[in-house]
Length: 147
Image (cartoon, rainbow, N blue to C red; front, side, top):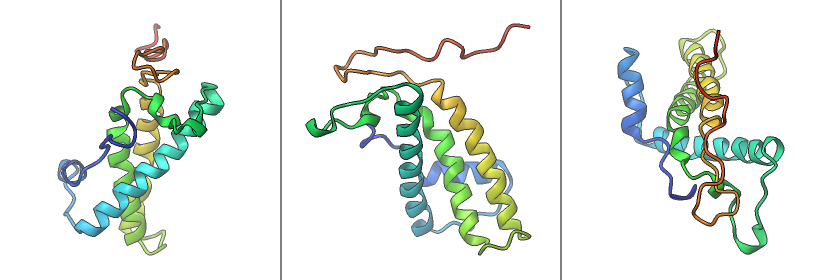
């Protein structure tokens, strides 16, 4: 699976979050689809920075290689993406009013996104040379710390 074909969020996955948290669904198809695309772009940009700056991974973009394709398991970002989609939707619905319920929900979902995104980065399986074989499995510090 490559980044371009990975499905991170769907309307169903976003609605499931809303139902689990007991919220009324106010999401239109257009809002969800636009925010899903935006969330994937934003996560992709952040992930590229992480890969280049922290993991020091580069690819030959002149040979049409896509940096994000080094992630062999991009769906580890699905939960983070769902939370970011919800955050983006509620941010738009808040109309910038930081006292509205929508703004509070946007902030809550964004905090959930940040936590999930940090966790997902530690679960990447990386194929540095894009040969189909995973070169780096999950970071070694993933798991419960010893007390």
